[in-house]
Amino acid sequence: MNPDSASRSALPAAWQLYTAFFACAVMLGSWYPRIPDVQRFAGLEGWELGFGLAGYPTGTLLLFTFGTRWAAKLSFSQSFRIVVPTLGIALVGATLAGNVASLFACMAAAGALQGVLAVTGNVVADQIEAALDRPVLVRAHGFYSVATVVAGAAGIGFRALDVAPWLHLTIALPVATILVVVATFRVGGQRSVPRTDEYHATIVLPTGPIFMLFLAGGAALYLDNAASDWSGILLRDGYAADATTVTAAVTAWAIGQAAGRLGFPNLSSLFGKERLALILAMIAAMGLALVVFSPAIFVAFVGLFLLGIGTSALFPMAIAAAARIGDRPAATNVSSLSQLAFVAGIATPIVLGGLVQIVGVRWAFASGAVMLAASLAVQILLHPFATPSNADEREARSDRTPQSAGQ
Image (cartoon, rainbow, N blue to C red; front, side, top):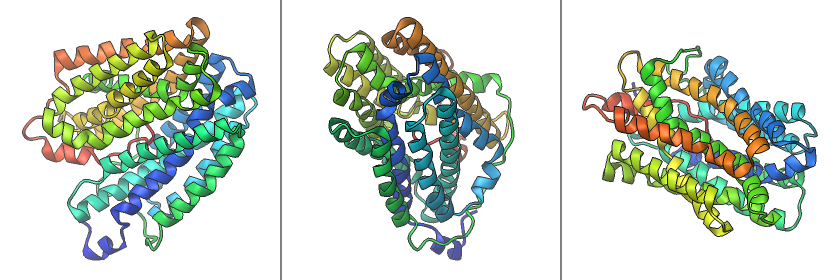
């Protein structure tokens, strides 16, 4: 049911939603390039860093499982004005973490706060789409990726000036806060109650088809985690790059993500979702090969860029496909796939950290080939991204389900 005219007038404009997503990514985009500095400051081994970074998906999983009903009732202005600065403070705390426990705690707080923003942002996007009768959420996530690029580019400058990570993020904090104030300017304080029950908090076990969709889209999550959290360490330890070059690694990946997300609607119309998913997985495989086997830093940057493109839309496409299965309500299947992804997200940094410790960072990245092979096999054999003719409405609804931003 569309919002009535009174509700519509109180909703933020689409550009305000884009600005809010951009503001959130300013902080996370500033954090990613400084992970190698945090590791060195705290003296963490690979597996220790992995355990610390696992706090982020742990916090997000807890929020999505037990706190979505509460988070969805926050207004647009309440959630973004309070949570974005608080998220920034948690990330500043993470830059000062001196051990695994403190890093895990700061990252868990940041992950839970990010989950609040993901729920509220998606609820509001749902309402705006109903009011304007046009999609805005995909573009909002595109602005999130653009902000990651901008913040990463700024990080290169801060690293070249030898600015400490805590000071770097402290400087970024008021920038994100000001952007949030702009985004919520003159927006009403009414609760952003969802139009459907898709945000009901529950634990939903995956079925066979859900697990197959997880394999089809899970490669994107594994490789995204590798690129966002470990690409700087890859260039530092795998390519002996200097500190400034290391900081630029995440930017290369984020540029690919932004290009893939902003271009997704046109690419989907051109190739169709099933063929596009195969193309993206193959692009990701090409990028991974360049990252692992390249003898030159420049080629590794190209590989990270291709990884960004290849993983940009696979998981959102899996979420949309989950809503089309039809064996259970769309919201139930979407929740099941999302929770499975968050559980895997907790294990991913731990696995990567352990592999970095045992076989080195290049071969830790190479482990993503297993996920890509599973994705390609499921796509070729089972066609999970095929769109039945009667699935249009369910797919449209699935595009408005909560997704963790920054992935």
